[in-house]
Amino acid sequence: MEDDWIEIYDGGSPEAEKEIFRQLVQKMLAVQEANRQKAGAVHARRALHAKVIAAVSNAVLSIDENLPGSLRVSHFQPGASLAATVRFSNASGVPQPDGTADMRGVAIRLDTGQGMFHDLLMTNFPVSHARNARQFVEFASIASGDRALMMERLEQTFGKSEAIRLVEAIAKGMRPCRSIALERFWSRGAILWGTVPVRFNLIPDASPADAFLDTAAGGEGLREELAARLAERDVRYRLAIQQYKNELVTPIEDGAVEWTEIASPSIEIATLRIPKQDIQGIEGRHQMSTIDALAFNPWNAPAQFRPLGNLNRARRDVYGATAHHWQRLMATKDG
Image (cartoon, rainbow, N blue to C red; front, top):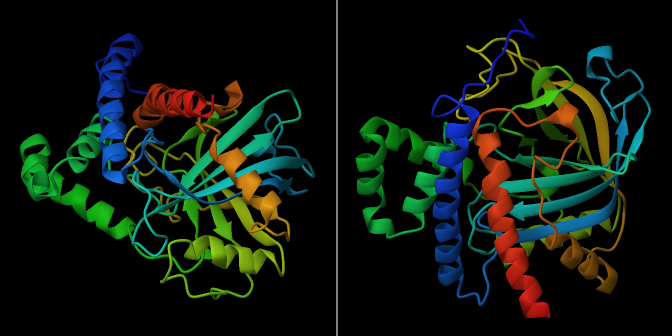
C-alpha cells in the first residue's frame, strides 16, 4: 500500500541516528581534505561532484497540463512554469578530465514562487553503491586512502561478499559519457511527495541522439559538446516520478536497491528546458562560476518534499557540513 510506509532510524531513534551522523560528518571532512591534497588544491572543494561540467540559471521546468491529481503538491500544479538553475558535474571528489570514466550528476534548483527554492539532485546511475550512510562514508573514507590496500580494507570493514558488491556497483556506474544531454539521471533515494514516498528521474529528450563532438579527448569535452548543442538548439529532459509500492520492491531505507520500472513505472510529469545559448562566452562562464559556488542539498525543499531514508537524512548533516567548509574557505580566499 502506498500509505503503508515507515522510516527506520539507525540506532533505534532519531536522536541516536543524529549522533551517528555527527561522527560521520567528521569522517567526510577528512575525505574532503584527502581529496584536496590529491588534487593539489589550495582550498577544499566539494567532497563529491567537485568538477562542474556546465551550469545555467535560465532553465525552465514546465509542468504537464495533465499532471495526475495525486502528484499535484505545492508548486507542482498543472501548467505551472518554474524557473530553474541547473548544474551538471562529474561525480568524483577530485577534478579530472571529462573523458575519464566516472558518474555524472545534475543538481536542479527550482524557484517555487513562494519565497523558497527546491533542490532536486540526481546521478546517472539508478542506485547508490551504499545501502546506508555508514556504508557510504566508510567506503568514501577507504577509497580516499591507499588504493593498493582498498580491497583489503573493504573486506575487513564490510565482509568479502559485501565488499565485492560495493566495488562492482561502483564499476557499473563509472563509465565514459558521450554527451550530458543523452544521459538519464535518477534521485537514487526517496523523498516525500505530499503524503507518498517517491523517487524521481530525468529522461533525456535529445535530438539528434548522437554526440555533437568527440568527448573522449580533452579535459572539457562534455562542456564543449553541450556548448555545441546549445549553440544550435534547446536541450530538454522529461522529469518523471516513481511512486512507492511496498517495502519489498520499493524500499525507503536501502539506497542500493533499484526501484525498477516493473515495480513502479515512471510517470512523466514535466519538461526541463535549457534554452539555446552561448555557455562558452564571458557571460556563460560567469554564470557557471556563480552557480558553482552554490551548495545544493535535497533538504533545500518545502516540507511536503522532505527527503526520506537513512542516506537522505544523513545528507542534511554531511552535505551541510562539507559545503560550509568549502564555502567558508572560498570566502576567505576571495576576501
